[in-house]
Image (cartoon, rainbow, N blue to C red; front, side, top):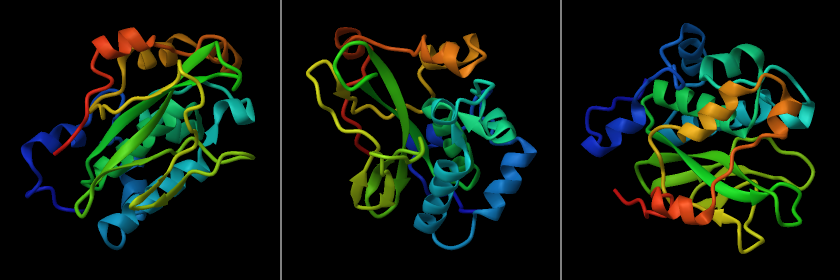
Length: 212
């Protein structure tokens, strides 16, 4: 495992375990160990690609149940983008790599309204700082990759009511967690995806620049 002894204090929040990012769960620790060979960047890439490719996106594959906790995502092998970001954070944090949560506001059908949040991750790499990755899973038209310093996410902003929020959160957004816990089937979740207006997002600090 990577040592965290010399990390700045303000990065410690990005290493914590809690009810959702339950990286102390034995199966997560076992998998984190399996993926933990080489330098930090290699471990980060391996964890990212494992979640991206081995955990099925709930909508893409129309799978149940709707998962939220990192351990449940691993147990059931499926999750919406938010849930997959929870598992990736757990695996990286278990390996001592600070990981946060990022969000975009995107058009659900690529035509404008309605909109929903989309969740992914930021990883703290020593040589460059925060680097964002999107483990939602690739398919036709989506090609998210790990190739720092170049950022290659799943989605680009297209409309004025969409947004790529700059804040890197140490914990998942509460409304996202509530939505995942409230619904049990992929299609029910699809009809109730969490959203936030740009005005509310600004008030809640989603546009704060993050520098360490």
